[in-house]
Length: 339
Image (cartoon, rainbow, N blue to C red; front, top):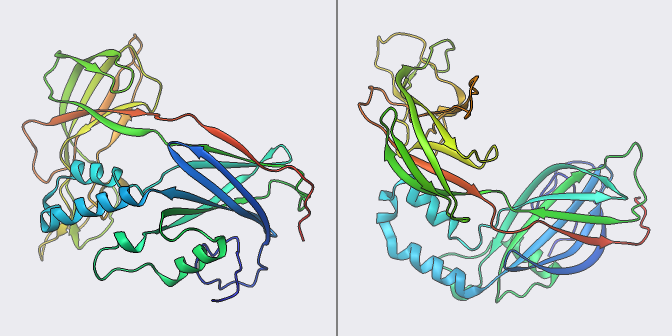
């Protein structure tokens, strides 16, 4: 196995720069968070910043059940709706999402980047699949049990000091991003009211539909002359009583946008669309928020984009919920210098 070295910018893969490897500081910290056992075996003090490896234990039984479920779907998995695919991805036990912060000597560092890998125990691996050799190196260096599943995340942070610090203390904080939970689906009609129930708190909210307008994207910028983009969408205004904090609720189209298509020879120049409609996994809707002179606050949602106008849109209400509390863990409490 190659010599173990960790750099600020290379993730788990081969380093190509000329900067020096970080100094490994064994930590050996373990803690429970969000229903899983987390380990921070070591951190690395680099010239420009800090590297922290988070190793999350995953029960093999959960991985096996998920893989069996995916294999049972077979080719029919391609026929799943976008919403069904999102739900399936959320059930993947190796799909661990979190936000992290690091504080050194009482000063919060600047988050730089992150990467991850997953280790699947042999008894759960699908036929013809194996874990990559690079992953084996991580497992061996940290002496992780190969019979368990692991989600291993490497997060990097830049020093927020004028000079390289002497690390007297280091704490990390973990936060789970808000999770989108689909609520009621409905078809809009001006003035109609809907009662929505929060999926976690059980609180009820009154959604009132306002104006509904068919609109077209303004064609101002040429993105690609070879492709034509959908420009028709429906805008709906609405109010929600009582209000939820910003970012905890939105409305979107149940359908995905039409994919761009090759422009026919001799067609007009100047296909354009704003940056929201070119993703590989399918275009998304637009979300706007406005405020009227009177309460309650008026919000706007835009449907998926289509080549032809649609007569009716089926919307879905989406709550973004927090399912666990943040956690702060002390990793270093002694004085450590940086070379």
